[in-house]
Image: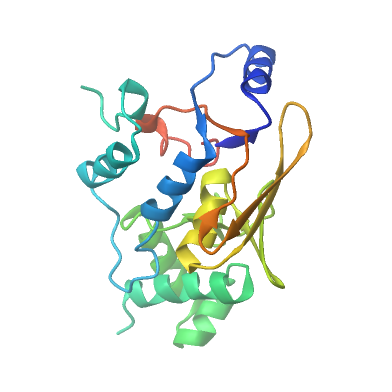
Length: 73
Length: 147
């Protein structure tokens, strides 16, 4: 996951690599995701979240659609 | 009996306090374990708990998400403390996890322009730049280094 100056830069970067852009979104949404995804990492009894738990976080941040599915339907 | 969870948390606290991963020998000294015992714990934390990533072919820690043990393009600063994030998501997550204000310094991979983010009062100061996820979510852990 990289930070670009603009969407034009993302497209140019992908063209140079002969690949199509993945998902592009703004920093406010990433900040929301950053605040929730790792919030239990300093708990002694941390465990890896299940796929449904992780999917729920992505959904709550508004990252929905096929790109954000953790499992293939 | 040292629980893997205690070692995992100590590794994280080491990242938080010092900004780098502990070497296996440091973990061994802290918990009075042999290097072999430490390596077994680290391998369990990687393969069973999915709690960290080791440098391939070694017992050395590469990532304990969101922290990176090696320098990356995502430098996180708060006061005189510094950490490396594995990606822009992880870099912001370090400030969020520690509930501190600070900054993330990176650069646009295409233009080379320096991009500097600031978190103040646990809010991200607006910046117009965009995040690009190249890998679909279902493939994130297939090659975590690439992701």
